[in-house]
Amino acid sequence: MNIIAATTNNEKATNQVYNCAVGDRTSLNELCEHLYSHLAEQFPHLNGYKPTYRDFRAGDVMHSLVDISKAKNLLSYEPIHRIGEGLSEALEWYVENISCEVN
Image (cartoon, rainbow, N blue to C red):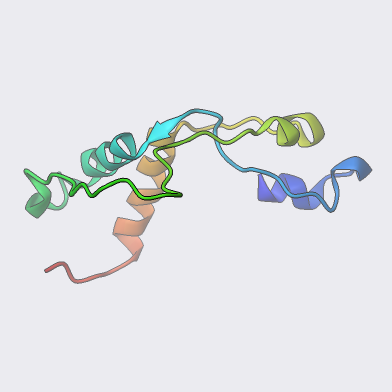
C-alpha cells in the first residue's frame, strides 16, 4: 500500500493519510492465537502459553477495525492478505533473520 500511495498518478490521492489494513476486525485474543499458532512449533517453550489479562483501561482497543475505504477509492487498494496469512509470511522472515535470546 505504501508503494501504491507513493507512486500514484492520481492527483486527488497525493498528500493524503491512509489507513493501511485488511478491513477485518481482529481481537487481541485472535492476534495472540495467530502469533502462537505460527511460533509454537519452532519455539517449544511456548507450549501451554496463556496470555495474561489485566483490567481494561480507558483508551484500550479491544478490537481493531480500520476503515480502508479512502485507500480503496483513491488508490484502488485491495488487501492481498488476511491477518493470519500476513503474520505467517512476516513471522517466517523474522524467525529466519532476527536473532534474539529467549529466557
